[in-house]
Length: 442
Ligand code: LLP
Image (cartoon, rainbow, N blue to C red; front, side):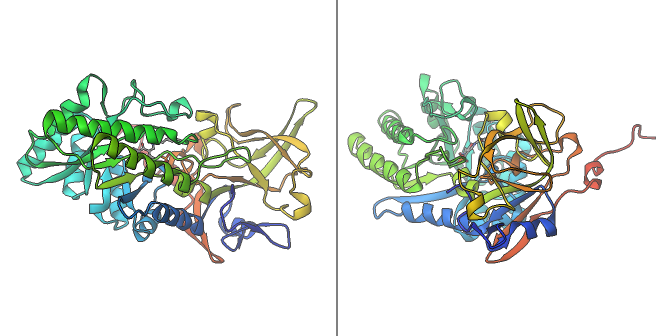
């Protein structure tokens, strides 16, 4: 499934999501428009909960806010019973502003400032995910000073290469994240925690990468983790019973993509836990996952209006849309591939692969040649005034959006059961100068 699960076509040949004709959404909210299908988000949360329910292993699902965050999303995640991974003071602020229960917040970040650490403590976040020795020391000392206890997990760099784009690999030996397993750095970190009476080591964490299709690396990670837990017990007499294996499950962006399912992941994870617990005589009481993209990715689409259609004879046909790299930087950063539909010409006879006869390049309105959302896609004939919907833009599009070229950020609209409402307002031109001040003070 590329489009959100509630997607259908109506008798006018328009795309309908969550019971809303997207052309009507366009009239109401304008374009470019991020549309989020609540049913798809709920369905993914439920799928994680259901597939990861085992009689002999407790599993916690934590949504990675960096994929997409706003107060409404935090409210939804809270209702769905998931935890929340925040990675900066800013994300923590958004979560708290939504009323998200602090004890279900996992505070990540590889370079937290002292102010951020204080803010996390003051907010009573459930867990600090400690990345490095400086953070450990700062946190340990602050807790001692304030006479407060804090649960922590240590982020470990397991030295595992995930099979994905190099920018999306985070678990390799040269990664900037976490305590390395090599040269006993991670072991030292565990030892160091015991120097701080107020810190409670509840587990170890790793996130090895994102948009991962070959999920066997999770089995390898679990093996490495359980082996390490055994080593920690043997060498330090410390018992660790919880592991957090991060996020990373890939999603479908194009018809060619064949990601593993949440169900496949659950099986691999469960089998690995059973196998390696036995092999290393270790027993876990809880496992955590931190999915971001696989919860929100397929729930979102971006609707654009086609402006100019430019033909460079014998070379290229450009469809120029009213957004671009300011609302979706992923094709430029990661060579990410996307798939699109003509939202106003979805009718059966018009949208089969046979009808997609013309090669187009879908490009944005920014001052860069690289501002291309889809380099080559076959579509039925497109004219100015048509509407393009780009699929799978729920994750890492709004959250990585910018005001490049003075483009106001697009609105985010939620849809469900025939209703639509704004989750994040469209920025106005005025918003673009809100923070600006005069040339000189006087
Ligand atoms: N946990 C940690 C500690 C993470 O750093 C991340 C993502 C996740 C969980 C969630 O991973 P997911 O399930 O979403 O793959 N901007 C890139 C993705 C960067 C991911 C960073 N960390 C992109 O657009 O593909």
